[in-house]
Amino acid sequence: MSCDAAASLAVLWLAATGPMQPTHTAAAAPPAAVAQEPLFVDIVKRASKLKAEVNAFMGDDKPISDAFKTRVGELSDLDMQGHLTLAKRGTDGDLKCILRGISQDLPLKLAAVTGAADHKTRVAALKEMAYLLNDNVEVITAPPAPPV
Image (cartoon, rainbow, N blue to C red; front, side, top):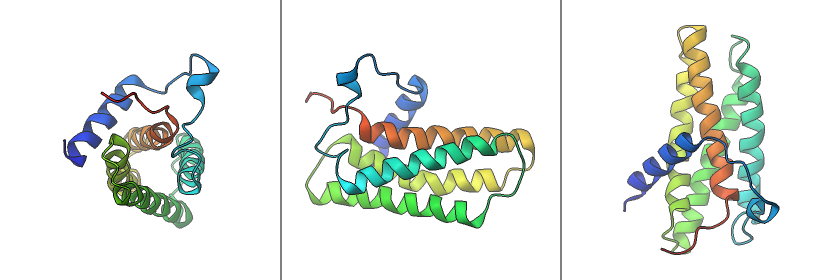
């Protein structure tokens, strides 16, 4: 399956399922293989902070700061770096493709937010960005699926 197809399917699946609620502590523990590596820890930390900022933007129409735009660009770059890191390892899993897709989608979601013509459109774009940032955290911290 190509990365584009896998990323599209994963984003649709994550969006359809909404935020995951752990059912027990063991399932919520991040897999040591990737989630504990500094690059991926940084991605999770940045995506979580950006999601909190996006949620704060929902109630106002203040312009999006250049600093926020820079942080989104940096996260996009880190997601691509994560993709390339996994590709270099020869990893042929969904995470590699999903990270590439998120890297490509973040600038598009930011453009939708900054280009929104009215409050309703802006809130819709912010919600989409919040879902993407949430997905960014969940795909890294989710326990690895058993081999199929």
